[in-house]
Amino acid sequence: MPLAQELVRYSSLLLALACLTVLAVKFVQEYLGGTLGFGLPGRALVYPEPDAKAFKPMGRAAVWKRLLLLFVVTRGLIFIGAYAYKAATQNGKLPFVSTLIKLFKIYDTEWYLSIAQFGYLTDTDHNKLSICFYPFYPALVKLFHFIVPGGYFMAGVVVSNLFLLVALYYLMRLVEGEYRDSRLGLLTAELMLLFPFSFFFSIAYTESVFIAFTILTFYTLRRKKWLLAGLFGMLAALTRNHGVLLMAPILIEILYDHEFFRRFRDKTASRSAWTLGLLRRFTAVVLPAVGIGIYLVVNKVVTGNAFQFLVYQKEHWKQKFGFFADLLFRHTGKIYTGEPRYAFGIWIPGILLFFLALLLLLFCAKRLRLSYSVYALAYIIISFSPTGLLSGPRYVGGLFVLYLMGALLLRHAPEQVRSSAKIVLSFSLCYYTILFVSKFVF
Image (cartoon, rainbow, N blue to C red; front, side, top):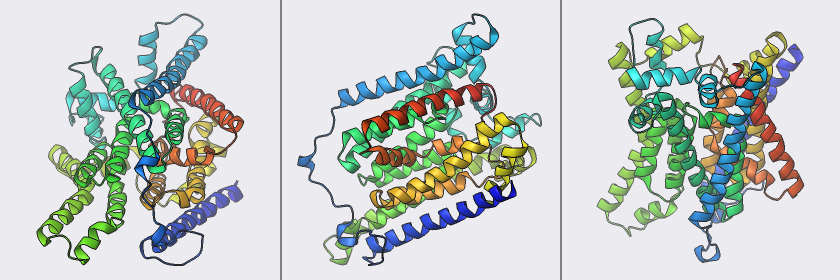
């Protein structure tokens, strides 16, 4: 066991350093026109804009037809599978809707629904912990409960699935536009739906809202709609703390906007117009931090301390920020000493996903824009830095770049390989859904 723990610790650190090195070299070569190794392109070859006439995007109706079919099939696997498992273990016929509500109205769902209904409460030691949960998703649930029958839980499910559909559509369009390949875009969306923990996208959790805003941030970034990208980044940060990481890709895309800086250098744009453009770009960069700032203000108003959520997380959940390699070391040990179902529901998939994500990042570094790669690396490291690490697999699911990297890996694979991968993912999705409703996945 100690040998396995040490192997995980040092291999995770070496892998993260390898990714960081590759991305640093990529930046030097692309932005500064360096000539270091790794076979990366020089500045003259950075992301050439393809001829728009050479590619015809898939029609909107065709896209929605494919996405809705994938949505219905995969969500059916989740809800019908969970119901079938519960009915089989109860040896009797159970009411479908009420059974699903009972199965999925657990853990963070109860906190978000309580905030949506009552706001941030401080009347009891238990209720005061609600400040640890970010406000934007409960606000959406509150809004939708006025128009969705069935109460707050059904409103939460509707919000999550609506934003899941938004995320799928714009993910497909983002990838399609980036690589001029509609099939790659659809494959990326399909992998997102088949991700073993994608059931979180369809229940009353923040995952689908967060990933939708991150995808919209990148989508608008690639179209140089800076303020809109910053606004989506701010909303992402109001949904989950990972949203503040969107400052990095926004800044990188601004730096890669060579035409904007060339106009200033060549004096082809008026100083006032260029200054206004720079102000828009600067505002876009800081807006995700504004989202976190708003959350800190909420903490201050509710508790009197802008950082009270950190106090409660440490006191109640033993949660604080740590070093990812040491935490992976610690949680590898829990595979051998803890409850086996926790091992298969939390520790093993979490550790495997960490290594899979970084290996994919190394493999795809040459085919990803730097903004995607930097965001992915930062996201993975931050996701595995909380000392609890109970929700590592769920956090990884919020990284849309993971699905793009998987699609790039399978893009030219034989059909038999792609089909086999989808079958394995489908079974894994059912398996982890059952572990979640059995309370062995968080």
